[in-house]
Every structure is written in structure tokens, then in C-alpha cells.
Image (cartoon, rainbow, N blue to C red; front, top):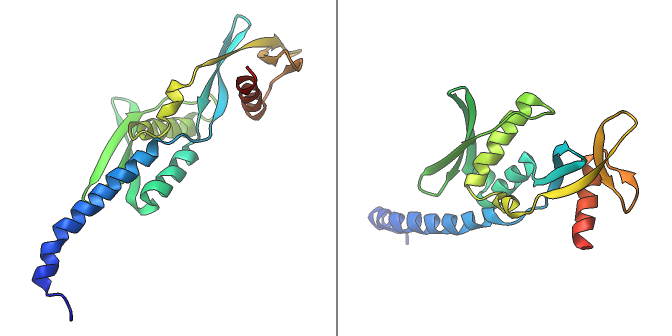
Length: 177
């Protein structure tokens, strides 16, 4: 026997409340630790400082996994000459938005700017926030024949030129303290 329409309508607020409670529980999963890489932040006086980071794709994948691809979206806008990104998540009842601005990248200026704004907005949701608790890594540098200083692995007497090798070296160093 079908449930009368009036009875169905009366149960709807309960379902909405249950969906909202489930979404709030899911949102806690956005704070989980993801795999990360290391990059050079600055180099001077024979030392390079390195910071941990995640890619924008890592944030997108986590949002898809936790809330579903259909339950999040982004909007980019400019305000006072700054590029902002808003990340909205549908809570089962309404869209909730959090935003932040980003800075230009040294590699791909515009793309890096968009990516940085997105990642910073994601931090407002808890994604990648753990990165700010990781210690900055300081490495010695060595001058290459081209005159530039690069991170140096004295244990291996090797200059580090790329991010993949840098990440492997720092992780090796941290695991072998």
C-alpha cells in the first residue's frame, strides 16, 4: 500500500536533517592527511628552505571522494585586484561557501595563481591544513657549474635538481634521523 502524500511530506524534514548530519560527519574526512611532496621555497646563503605541498588535483580528488563530485563547486572572482576562489559544498540542505585568495606561481603565472587560490580555499574546509604543522626543512646547497645554488645531499654527494628527487631525499632524511 502506498504511503499517503501528507505522511511523506511530514517525513521530509527528518530526511533533510539526517542528510545534513551525514554530510557534517563526512566533512570531517576532508581533514585527513594526504600524500604530499616537497618544493624549494627559497635559497640563500648556502641554505635552501623546503616546504610540503599538495596539488590542486589532490584537493579535487578528496572532495569527489568525501562529498561526491556533484556536491561541490568553485567560483573564481576578482576583488580589489586580487583573484579569489570560492569552494562551495552542498550540505544536503544548502550550499556553504568558503573562499581565499592566492598568489602567482614562479612557473606558470596564471595557472599557478588559480591553483593557489583554489588550494587556499580548500584549506578553509580543512583540506591540507596538516601541511602547516609540518616543519620547514632546511638543506645545504651546492653551486652548480651554471653558477646557481641547488639543494645538496651530502650523504650522497649529489645536487638535487628536480622535485621528485627532492621529495624522496627529504622523506629519506626524515625517516632516518
